Amino acid sequence: MSQTRLVEVRQNVLKHNDVLARELRTRFEAANIFVVSLVSSPGSGKTAFLEKTLTLLKEKYRVAALVGDLATDNDAERLARSNAPVRQIVTGTVCHLEAAMVENALADWDLNELDFLFIENVGNLVCPSSYDLGEQLRIVLMSTTEGEDKPLKYPTIFNTADVAIITKMDLAEAVEFDLAKARNSIEQVRPGIRIFELSSKTGAGMEEWLEFLESHLKE
Amino acid sequence: MATDELKKNNGTRVEALYLKLGGLSGVVKDALLFSWEIACQRTPLEKARLEIEEIPVIVFCANCRENKTLSSINNFFCPVCHAPASNILQGKELEVTALEIV
Image (cartoon, rainbow over all chains, first blue to last red; front, side):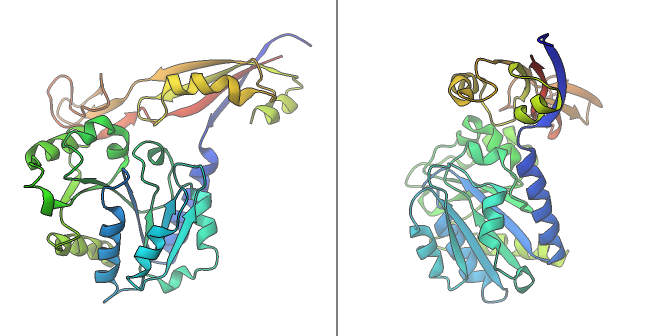
C-alpha cells in the first residue's frame, strides 16, 4: 500500500481561469459586445489612452470600463471624467486581473446595454500575459519614453497581444525615440501584429484606432 | 488538485509533481522552484519534488512548410529561412502531467 505510484493527471494549472474566460467570451459574444483588454507597464499611458478612447467613442456608442489596480481607485476617478460607467477592481496584492475578478465586477451590469467594454489590467508586463480574461482583443501599450527594446525584454506579453499601440508620440522627438527600431522590436516577437502610433494628449492617430475598433463592431 | 488525486487513489502524500513548462507560459522556472517549498508547506505536497520539463517553443514556418524549434522567445523568425513565423504550435504549456503518490 505504501508503494510509490505514478498517477497521470494532464491538467492545465490555469484551467479554472481558462474555463471561466471561455464562459465570459461566450457571454460577450451573445450580448454582441466587443471587449478589449489593455496591458502595459506602469506609466505607459493606459489610463490617458482609455480616457480619450472612452470620451471619443461615447459620442456614438455605449461604452464602459473596468480598471484593475493594486491599491487605489485613482484611475477609475480619472476615467469617470469621460462620463462612461467605470468600475474599479482593487486587486490588493495580486499583480494581474483574473477572469473571476472580471466576472464579479460585471455582476449587475446588463451587457446587452453596451457596445464596447474595456478592461484595463494592472500595470505589469509579466503576469497578465498568462490570464485570459475572455476579451476579444488584447492590446499592449508601450510609450515612447520606455525604450525601443521593451518588446524584446517582455516577449511573452507582446506575443499574447493582438494589437500593439505606441503611446506618447508627442514626446518622441524630445526623447529621441527611434520609431523604426521600436516597430522592429515588436515585429521580432510578434510578426504581423497591427501597430498603431498615437498621442492621447494631442489626439494624433486616435482616428485610425477608433476606425479599427468600429470595424470590429460591424463584423 | 493534489488533494483530489490523493483521495481518488487512496494515497497519503505526494512524492513528486511533474510539470510541463513552456517557454511562453509566462512562468519562470527559477521563480517557481524558489517558491515551491514555501507554497507546499502544510499541504499534501509538503516535501514533494517538483520535476519540471521545459518545453521549447515550436512554430510552423509557412515558407519551409515545416515545424521549427525557436532558440529564443524574442525572435519569432524561422531559424533556417528567417521568415516571420507567428503560428505557435507549442510553448504555452503550464500543465501538471503526473503525480507520484505514496
